[in-house]
Length: 116
Length: 114
Image 1 (cartoon, rainbow over the protein chains, first blue to last red):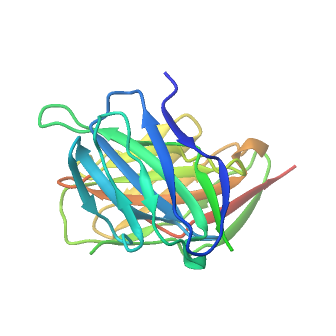
Image 2: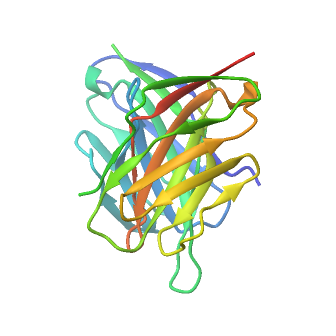
């Protein structure tokens, strides 16, 4: 299993440009998450999904959009990039059910985004 | 809302010695999980240890153990026999039992010196 994979690893955007950060997991996890990590800080939740077709906002959703059309994929869309979105973005996944919960979140390697 | 506080931005320890990282949290929940994640220079987030709040016994994973004090809302990480590879940023994180979202502290940068 590759676990959680993210592309690209690094990207430079100009102010006002848009892009999509890709995230894929092959662990058949139903829950997926997007976090951002600003320099010297902890991670903050942007959006999360409890299954295909269901998404919800986290702590810092402004400026981002997500979709979840399949169990495996959870792309994060940045519209009209701003310097404040310069950060490292992490995707994560976990399995949760009424019978068996695995509360551990498994993280991808991160995408470093620089908006100039 | 939950908050997680790590009051030690940086710590250092000599190789083979023991170090303790502090974490406190604030919540009104009774059922929850606590985690320590390690982030080495590669930036990969790696789970170190987890604790379920309803378990009184402190979790251990090889050289890593926690001191979980539920009444005090404290969750410290002890690293024994520190190794150079333990050099990393360590994050404490909280998760409500009914909710899968993690709330992170701001991290402690640990440096293990030879």
